[in-house]
Length: 199
Image 1 (cartoon, rainbow, N blue to C red):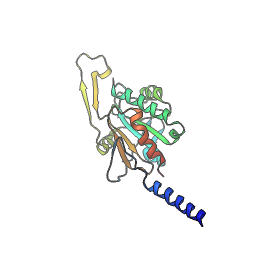
Image 2 (cartoon, rainbow, N blue to C red; image 1 turned 60 degrees about the vertical axis):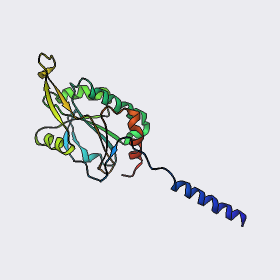
Image 3 (cartoon, rainbow, N blue to C red; image 1 turned 90 degrees about the vertical axis):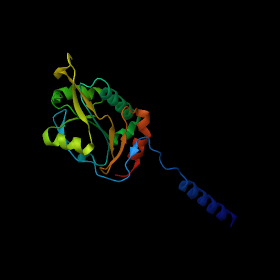
Image 4 (cartoon, one colour; image 1 turned 30 degrees about the vertical axis):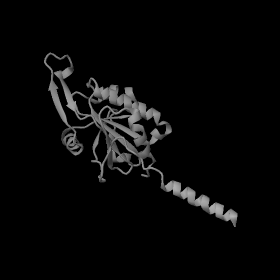
């Protein structure tokens, strides 16, 4: 009888502790309502077709930038590569997508020499025409050319653009955004949380 009572008390304690576990505290901004991420189709740097919805069951980190970017873009891709490496085996279910906001200069050849230099598993996607405009609108991406007189950069302009990182969960919902300049340590726990959720 005493043994049964001890087993019962142990069971109650375990269940009670499980119920008291703290909910995950997010570093980024999580959306209150669930909404499907806008699906889009573009061309990866290797010439193959990329479609966002093909990556259901994976966590997708989506970043908009351009290859001639002097600061935010290379730093962000470097941080995403560090995050990818820190995740170890969990990175198998993480997809990192870099979408150019400068399709005029960012040819597939240019993208192919840029994106894999950070991580060969990353996608470097080029969009054009109506699809490009639709994606900018759907994700609220700000893009504006800034011409610099006397600049030696091809075209003579930089591109001011949104620097946040979008997280699409395993079921295809736009679930969280990370602010510009988020480093790997800032994002890791949140990404691990979404990776642990069922698809």
